[in-house]
Amino acid sequence: MEKDRYSGGQRRPFWQPPWGYREGLSISLGLLITGFALEAATGGTGLKSPSFPYNLVILIALLNVILFLHAFFRDKPVIRWLSSVPASLSAIILLTFLVLLLGLTPQPSIETHVIQKHLGLSHVVRSYPFFLAMLFFFLTLGLVTLRRGFPVKKKSIGFLLNHAGLWITLAAAFGGSGDMQRLTVTLQEGKDYSNNAVNAEGEGIPLSIAFKLLDFSIEEYPPKIFLIQTSSLEIVKQKQVSYLESTQGKKHTFGDWEVQVLAFLPSALQQDTGFIQSTIMGAPPAALVEAKSKGTATTLTGWISSGSFMYPPVFMRVDEKYSLAMAAPEARKYSSDIEFITREGKTGRFLLEVNKPEKINGWKIYQVSYQAKTGKWSPESTIELVRDPWLPVVYTGIFLLMAGALYLFWIGKDRKKSPGDSDKKEVIMQQMEQS
Image 1 (cartoon, rainbow, N blue to C red):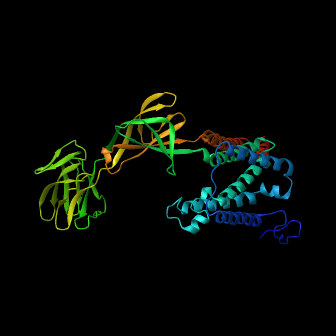
Image 2: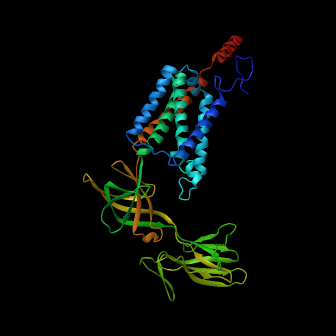
Image 3: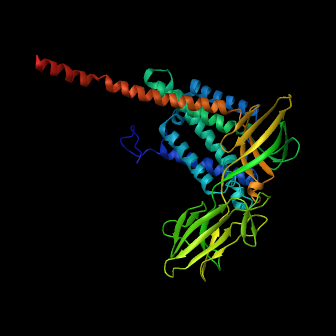
């Protein structure tokens, strides 16, 4: 229960200064309802992230407002409350609630419910409630930083670095989102240079860089061998291992059957007598396996294959219910051999692999996908180009956060090393007793 120190312990009336948690939560709830109302009134269209230079102008204006309020109105009750713990916690609670909604609702979804769309739940980050919550958060964070960080003292440096770093990081991340570009380019083997990119909305974007796919390759794991129910093709799960790698010499026990791989062909074609090695397009992997029954001492030998987009799979029946089958091989890694040329005439060549991006003219280029149906015979490769000009500002904020954390650690360590007044008194008393 909130008490008013000037009223003899009586409960402070609602909305009477100094404000506390009740008013803070009420303001958060009011901002949330206002945001939902704005979304409903605009048909759930949300807000479009501003791009340069408008986002920079907005951030500078917001910073100037915070500085102005602190410089001329910091002793006013409302401004003092905005730089207090109750206001900060209220802003954090509101923002946390919206982040939870962001994680619990599809963002976005083609089958979005009409109510979900009109409340902004299908685009939380671009919604009016999120905008108002971020504005509330930036105001409180900025005013708290100025009130407790200035004038700068030794004990306030860590606080100032942490809070200023957080403000800069979030302001750059959200304010600069309108300048971030994420485009995809699909390249075809044997085709000429292409600079046609597509954004998330499916719009064509011409690039200042053209790419040419020389070769696309995939390294695969050895395909796995499973015991399946012949009628339903469902995998029979074992208590320990449910599969056997198709590497030659590998053994595994499936129930009453001990299975061993006698031979493995990574690319093969089926003949009357079995499978033979082949390098033609669509030739799937195949394995010669031997299955021994523990109960009947029966030994079966036969070929199995995963099949491909051109050839059907091949199973080996071991009894009336079960068969041995091979799964399609999984990709270990895939890469694209690419040539490029820029508008300025710069040329080059690079091997693009997953998680190993290349940098060209401010773009980060990633290997993202290929034609899954054809697998290692895919004639195309999809690359992604990402550019975020605000990333250095985000890194600056993170650096300040780290510097603040290190400073607080150093101050805490320094305080432990240097005894306080009470510790000094104890040391002097011990010395007097010893003398």
